[in-house]
Image 1 (tube, rainbow, N blue to C red):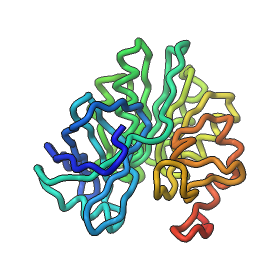
Image 2: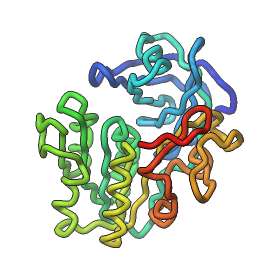
Image 3: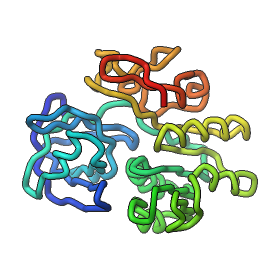
Amino acid sequence: MITSQKPLEIINIITHSNRIKTFYLKLKDKIKVIPGQFMMVWIPDAEEIPISISYFNGSTIGLTIAAVGETTRKIHELKTHDHLYVRGPYGNGFKIPKDISKIWIIGGGYGIAPLLFLARKVSNMNIKITSFLGARNKDELLFYNQFKLLGSVFVSTDDGSEGFQGDVVTLVEKYVNSLKVDLIYACGPEALITKLIKLAYSHNLNLQASLERLIKCGIGLCGSCCLDPLGLRVCKDGPVFPLKILIKINEIGSYHRSSSGMKVKF
């Protein structure tokens, strides 16, 4: 683990759309990374923010970043050979039980990114992968070709420019009774996760989902990412949680917190 901010050189940048880029960084230290974990990322004159890991091969780490705020827009201005300051990885990632043979991967928007890292790891374990990928439109559909190399892929877009028109959970519902699955892995917007929790619970399906909350410290000290009513910390106890925990978190789909700690409705 990188315990304090270290500058890592950007060795490649892939532009997926006008909003989303993947930055590949050259690692200086040997670290262990589990799919679903995140790095704390910083550049001068900006905030430190958590970013999920979309690629890792021991010497290179990939961070897929959407330009959705001041800090991420500044990061998007960086070029090859510039540096990002990082520490981590942090959090509990996706767990892969030994007795599974079929999984679904369900991702929405840039939440698809960390699931590719997971899919690549699972593909080497004789596990059948079926992926459901959702995006606003065809241009923002992340890593479609890479997922196709790993198994069957079903696609939805909000505008119908690729695949099924509608949200990805509605697409999943079309197959929930016909495709057998041992475990579902999910990451994406809160609305997606909320619908999946209800779907998994009603059909008695095993689910692990990654949650997104305001993370300041990344190590469980500040409490900015605590979840009602259990007091679990997304940065330390998550960001990935199993269904038996998810169904007990009553704020999912209802509200999150601002930087001051105030509850903000979705």
